[in-house]
Length: 95
Image 1 (cartoon, rainbow, N blue to C red):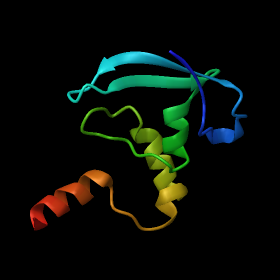
Image 2: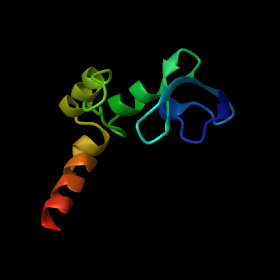
Image 3: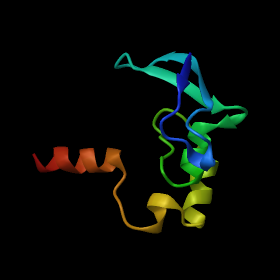
Image 4: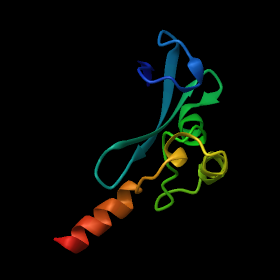
């Protein structure tokens, strides 16, 4: 799967090719993929910079990058926020 990137962490130009490797579907039918610009794993880069989270419910793949972002603190970790899955859980408990 080839696409032009819109969000390019790490200062990549938007004209560079983003290559995604299809890894199947999740339980909701959404495509699961690993995406790269050259050899750079875009998901790993986003998590390391604090702009995405490791979703441990499905994979432990980016936990190390998330720990680096927390320790820095980078991106979202430089302030306060609630992880989306916790927010949804809390909202369901209130309803």
